[in-house]
Amino acid sequence: MDVDLLEKNSNNLAEYFNCIEKKTASLFAASAAMGAYIAGADEDTVSKFRLFGNKLGTAYQIVDDMLEYTSTVNNKESIHMSPSLVDIYRQDMADSKAIEKTREIVEQLVSEAHEIVDHFPPSQSQNRLHEITNYATKGLFPEVGTGKC
Image (cartoon, rainbow, N blue to C red; front, top):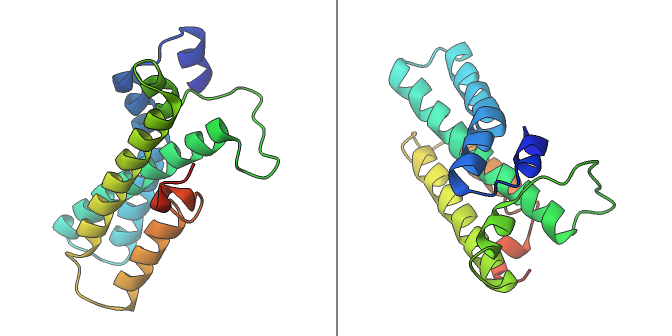
């Protein structure tokens, strides 16, 4: 799917987010929902976990694409470069602004994931979900939280 977007030379937001939705976000959402089902959660809780997984998966994929774009992952090389949100934003703004705008999108998604987790009763599990959310996004790309890219 990533290569198709590059071959079409189609760096538009709707297609980018559609690609994430069909891959990484849906995988994270399904995983979170299945965990809730297995634990015996009711439908409302399962829906919250599904939405949490979607937000986390989307943020994760944007950070992963941004890491590829900025080449900050140790020796990470892809056979095909994936289009990134930074690439899309660079069509209309300077590189530094595109990186900042992408960082803001990640921050928003992470915030939304944390808000969903905050609906669950306070517990060690809730704390772990917050930690996982940060680790899988900001922890992979520490500059996301500091504005340094």
